[in-house]
Amino acid sequence: MTDGQRAAYPTGLRERKKRRTRDALLHAALDLFTTQGYERTTVDEIVDAVEVSQRTFFRYFASKEEAAFAIQEMVESHFLAQLRRRPAAEAPFEAMRNAVLCAWNSLGEVIEETVTVELHMRTYRMIESTPSLLAAHLRRCSDLENQVALLIAGREGLDVDEDPRPRVAVAAFCGVMRVSGQLWGRGRDSDVDSLRALTEAYLDQLGPALAGDWRTGRGAQ
Amino acid sequence: MTDGQRAAYPTGLRERKKRRTRDALLHAALDLFTTQGYERTTVDEIVDAVEVSQRTFFRYFASKEEAAFAIQEMVESHFLAQLRRRPAAEAPFEAMRNAVLCAWNSLGEVIEETVTVELHMRTYRMIESTPSLLAAHLRRCSDLENQVALLIAGREGLDVDEDPRPRVAVAAFCGVMRVSGQLWGRGRDSDVDSLRALTEAYLDQLGPALAGDWRTGRGAQ
DNA sequence: TTGTCAACTGTCAGCGACTGACACTAATGT
DNA sequence: ACATTAGTGTCAGTCGCTGACAGTTGACAA
Image 1: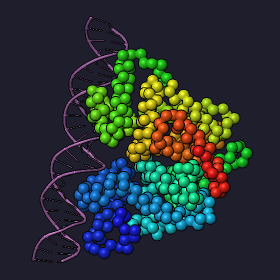
Image 2: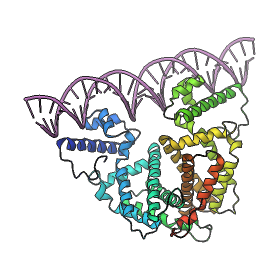
Image 3: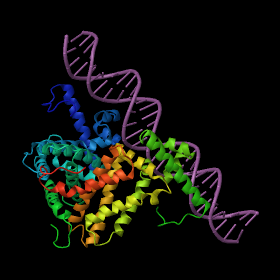
Image 4: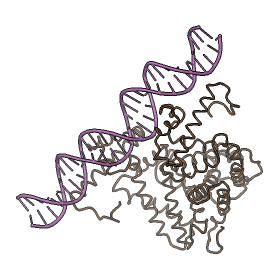
């Protein structure tokens, strides 16, 4: 994650061992988090399940929180990669929207070798429903927004400090994304498809919602 | 804050004493936070400055964090009050925008008896530049967004669970608000007027930013 | 005024997240 | 086979925060 771009599978025994304990810690952590709740599981419980010392946990993860976001981290950089790949002809909104949908389509290929999609979805719901994690999540989204704004500005040949539109557009887009994510988290369905459907429906409402008069037609869904 | 609407100045000695220590704690906390930084000041430092026990601090504030947001809390409920007061004729966006501007106009009258506007602005900048506080701030904004969405839906006679437009509109609006808040936090000017000017400029760009083609005209500022 | 009651405060012991220092063990390259 | 180096465990300690208990001090009635 920090040293190489792809790493092409570590070769040495040492490397493999490291990856194994990291994976084991991550699995134990996410398992406990999603079953007992984040606050109610101590890092001592996690390390006991893997039989390493607490110190070792904190060598792999800077904090208990970081473990909760390990997969999210992968998904986010995958999204950014998709966004960079969008054709220049697409308008900002179109590009962002398509990047999100494409990223979700290829979710499995990206994370499956670390964790199942199902566990990731459960983790995501746990993040949304745990106050302290929700806070961290929103800050991470804010960082992501910043990167996306720079990217979009680049596509359009603009400077984010000169022209407010990139930041404004990204803020509006991400705002809607977060709302649909939260609503999905509170709902019953917990698969990727229902998340995608809800998100598309909400993004479609951005234009209509900004139009002044709502009292004429009825909304979607 | 929890018991009465206005409280009309506490009468007993006990009440006055309580308010005094709470104010003293708050002042000491915000002073230390804004000068040394939030992470670098311990609760022990705060209580030493006021000469009370640590336990007392935690009876007034549920956490160190809560002290940092005490003023923000007042400002937010003031904003909600302003929003409720907007005439029904105003469109959702108009109402939110005017409520924000009115709230800032009367900022002094609301907080001045607790803390100077200048200290509050310094505190706000500190929040924006301290990662853990920024996270908490964003979560609080998210809560506020929820309340605003309900309020807006009510004005328009809609149900937030039926029609996505209230949530979408509020998300877009708050997204832009947060962006301008962050940029202001990073900039040089730290008075309310510059914050208001920046915010207005950014809100004005919401419509243009959503229009597909940016390569024709140049942005504001 | 006095005494009772309730509210407020301090002390203490303890938990959980996290860190630095140091010693120990085991993979790696020669 | 050996020195090097990376990874791990142990220990002690900081900081935020909490429960339990005891002491103090305003409030209110007799």
